[in-house]
Length: 582
Ligand SMILES: *Cc1c(COP(=O)(O)O)cnc(C)c1O
Image (cartoon, rainbow, N blue to C red; front, side, top):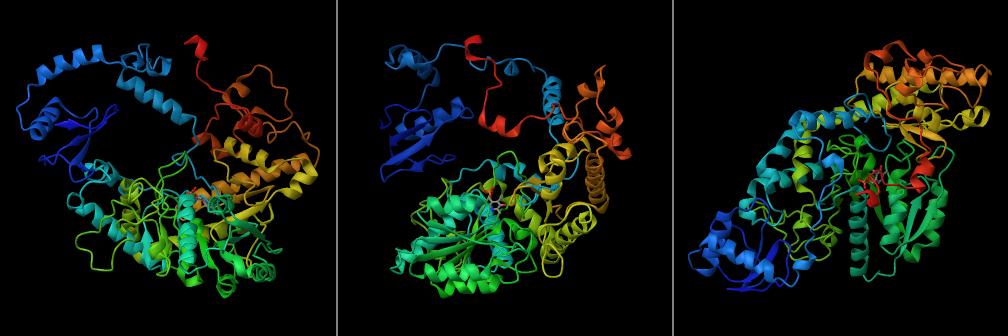
């Protein structure tokens, strides 16, 4: 037996053609197989593999002795670290299950999460992640399978992915789905790459201009740049819609080189743009393609679709619209849907496989065998979390999904209607309605009182609420997206908190509280603040931490006072003990 790998971490390449029952050896070439070993590999596994590959019986104890000698003679032995690892106290403090549990609970207590109250982060769609949807993720059939496992060992998995693909096709109206990108931003990248490859195949590789409206999410221009496109910004009108005249002028001006438009619908201004079909038509007339940013799909499902408005390709944030939990970094899934002409240019994967029972021509776009341009290491991205979206769709069905969209829009309009006399709602459609989120304008308040959106965001913590999205897409505003998952009672508590905060701002306006010493500027308030023997503030301790009667019933205690966010972002420091102390 010849081992081809000279130095290794956990993976070996071996010259063999052996088949080992119960093990999957990766086929590297006709005569070479790859195998990886980890901490779950047993001595018996090693013995079985060795016996199958060498054809000789194996004495595993003898190998132990050999191993000890080998280590002594290893020229790289000096590279082994000899110092203690995981010396930080956090790794050496919690030695019983109770202690571990309490440590985790203590961390949890610092976090204002969905288990405490609604998180109205606009554009983020912080909806319910139902327990029933999460359970299949824990099943070893989904969690313990390698992404490159032979397809005949993953037929159930592939059936689930196929089912989800079919549902997403029905929801978006697209001809193909590529289940590979791991995030919305990666979906944008995969989508723009598909557009560029399609255009190159048409002899139009020179098309390198990407139109992006002013209101777009930052990932849009970033993705366009990564794809080598030149970004041309399109203006918005006073109602927050894309300025169609400006779009037309810029599409015309760049017609010879127009690659695409990146469009968010409903827009990040929280409004269904009435001109959306006209906008897509203008781009097509000038030889461009339309990429729809699908982050706001929660306002479309069952009512309209990316294909219906005229988009050619779009991502879906499964971790927004389709119930995968998010926040704190992932994992997410951002599959893209494509019209037929773009489908052959979607990312492929060398380990692509079709479900054995798929009808011909029914391949997932990410199953383009041998195709180039994978955007993820695994053919189906973070496949193990797809059961969450599958469950969400299967549990609700078409009618339920449509109802969810309707309630998401209803809830946003309820919040907007109740709050608009206290905070102007920045943008609305012609009928005065918003889509699934609304932007509250704080700029006038800021100009007259100095109370800013950030003060309202911090103060909401004292009322037990996570802040909405701040200063996106418009500086000096907050964007509220309640989602369909919240009850009227919870919406009413949130609205009451914001109205109460508006009253506090009025006290500043009337001069009852100084502009720089009031519950807003000093929010959030900690237990240490109100336990202090000195209390020399113009408002009471009661007003600080129990500003409404029901707050005390379920009080969230912020663990620290306000930090200067911008300063913190620019001056990173490590909370670990300094290296020299270790
Ligand atoms: C969330 C979001 C994105 C990016 O999605 P990720 O999954 O976070 O990469 C893009 N556009 C909009 C409008 C978004 O809200």
